[in-house]
Length: 364
Length: 232
Image (cartoon, rainbow over all chains, first blue to last red; front, side):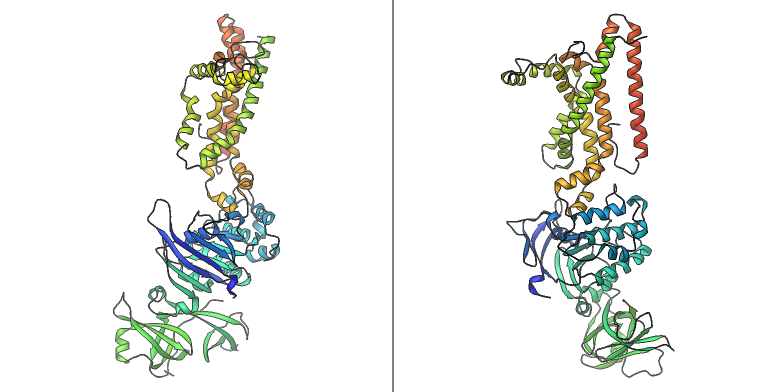
């Protein structure tokens, strides 16, 4: 990541019409990977995204991508001149055009100097070949959203903005679309800003995160780092989790298991279609981690990591529970155990203990 | 019951007038309707009221003021005179101008409602797809407002065909110049030529029914599209 290739966003006290809400942020968004704008509804995520896109008129801000100014107090590049793609919460296809014509609308106006992703590749990734002749009113919500994502890619953006593309879909459709999104996020080289209030989506998709509350930035950083911190919004979340990236070093066909190696430790996972040498991400929820002072060889739990207690704090919402930050090498893992257990085991900072992990979820 | 040459002349004049007025009104109403649909200016209310006034004013009032303004002593009439143009009252051109004022709301309002029904979303989507404001208007707003344009065309045409009071005030009844069907019917009745009045009146009834039936059936088929217009 080079410094010149960064989206700089500085917005001073931007007030939305007819409300008390104001946005006040100062951000550098990396030029690679997926950056999630995360926060509860009403935190200003969508407004921030609309300011970046130029859909919100705003004189008090400063916006630049790779030192190319989009917005200062003197210039204001209109939305149609910004090299962006935008996926709206509700697909927002043109109702008078077929799916194919919606895509043509983008292709005709695409920035020919940018070569991001080919037409056939987009059609394949989004799996939309068969629905191209249909009108938007004939498509399901999920199909519409896939067309909308394809359309945003075909404009050949330098920056792709996605405003909760799954929020308007029900859970089964979310599960249907998420793999397509993962494919886009991980295979395109376009930096993506992804707005969401779903921790699950963010953990799956985002490399970087910006957490917004009431129009202000409360946390920002790499997903892996932020998730492994105590005292943050995430560690207080009921699904508090960490993400671990490792490489498959060993597989056992007999037991149907793979060994994922990271930081001099191994985690055993159910074998999927990954191969030795593949890089994999997995998610460990804090409630699935328990602690013991000695290796429990007589336990059915396979994953036992030797860790050091780095920090521990009481759960402010639930006095019976304690959150611990453990370090496996330099990789943080969060554990949520009862206060009674920490007392009985006399756990303290700096102590070496065994973390037993009941289950892990593979992300990709 | 045969149509006399004078009747035929009146029918032809009516069709010519209505076609020309509709065409001019569609062109003129498009920017007005777009502005009214999208502006947040304080002027929106008063301008809307001015556009809608012909809906509530008696045609005689419209005709009276038009006569004053367009006549040789009127503000506009004087300018035309200075430019060496012939005066508008009691001419076909005058009839066109008067009819445009009279039918304006019937064309502006359906288009305006169609533009409002489109909303911001498709236009914002187009903006993020590198479509300039003019480009968005042509390729997104106009196609989406098509039902409104169809309503506006039909209503503007039909309403111009049906006018009487304004024509009489500003155009009089000069055969083949300003004598439209409605005035011709009036003349027939005045002269107790009920047979001829019947023929023309029935033609008008049939015309009105056909137009409205067509319009309503069009609306029904376009259920998922923006509303065809606010007047029906």
